[in-house]
Length: 357
Length: 226
Image 1 (tube, each protein chain N blue to C red):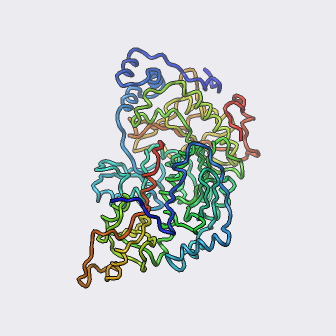
Image 2: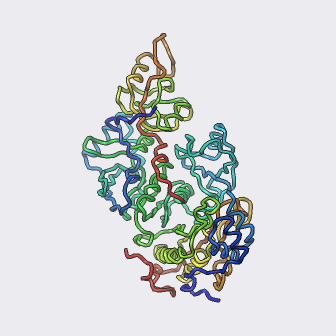
Image 3: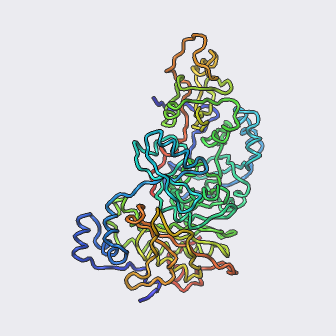
């Protein structure tokens, strides 16, 4: 048993049993993926069944332009049925879409930027940051802007948010959403997250990392045939982003790391890597979602142990009626005199997977 | 029926030219103050909508020019909070604050958001529409005479106008006044009264040609997953 970082970069392979193969074949999944979920996740039968059923759709109210009562009245007057649900942060307002006579994105309210279609679980990440007005905030993988705009709403558009996205057409989508929702406090930089200049540093960093997206399966059937080979490159990228985030944080700053996947290498494994850099796990400011307790992070998966991930939490479709999600909050020690550099970590050499500035 | 828009002089249909940019790296943008000719051009455009519009914007925001010199070079006036400017300008963002106008040789042209920022302060060139007209306009359709509930000022044909929802004053977008709108005003309509004096009017005539509405952000956007 080991928490060796190099070992954690290799995907854990679990031989599929006949029952797993049968289920995978019936539903069009890659058997090796199903075998991993069955081995690592709590309530595996419920998890698997939830991946082939839809979850509810949610609408986040753009509190810069509207409020939940106004939006609710507007939508109900057009034949929609909606229900207010509790968001992970009381500053956010969310409606569950119970009946859509036509696409909500075609309503004047939506077109005018009064709402944003967003899964409830993904709001765990901005809420975990507990951002405040006046802060300098970095969103390291921002497109298309759902979490970025949620952060802007949390601070009433009174913080400086740098939203980074390396792919131009994704940056364009991000910019369009910022413009549609009328957010003024965000700057968009088209670059890789690992190349953001240090500058004065950031009080809060959101790293909603590129991942294998297994938690999105209830909504995206294409991911059923994913491959374990994707994990290695993504894990390397995630570690590289965490390395750089650690250096960009001011002493006392907060990093929120999140993914929408079940893969422990990309979730708890990433947290362990961050802790090895000197970041400290912190409790999340919430413990439930949609009326159900969030699930504690895994303590182990295969030969790997995750002793420092106890504060992190997971959301599951069958428990929370949302997409799958993972969120962890880490703090940079207040007495950190110098920016923490990846050069000081005990992990693999910095040059591996780290882009040059 | 939606037809290809005929842009008025002070309108910019830009909603983000990067929406069509090929998949290549974009150069960082330059951020600087407006020079005197640029300030004058902006003032001239905003004055069309009210005497104090520019002054009110400048009292609340820092107005800067964001210069892009990549595949589609342009100069854009942005409104940005002063604290945000200090924090974010060093990162050479390609987008910052709220883009309110595009600077070209012909002068300053309002963007869609520029219209939204001008609307609360506008005392002329504003057209208010009823609920059905609101929905149609947000779907890219022209406004008919029968949809118009009120007009501020006396726009001439081919003048740019701001379009607002009559019920809650919600900003919808930008259009271009037609002869039919001018005719409405001349025959006593458009300030709340309808059909005075027994004048013949064509309710089905186009009063405002659609130019840009807030729905453009969604219609033009490529689907990008979260």
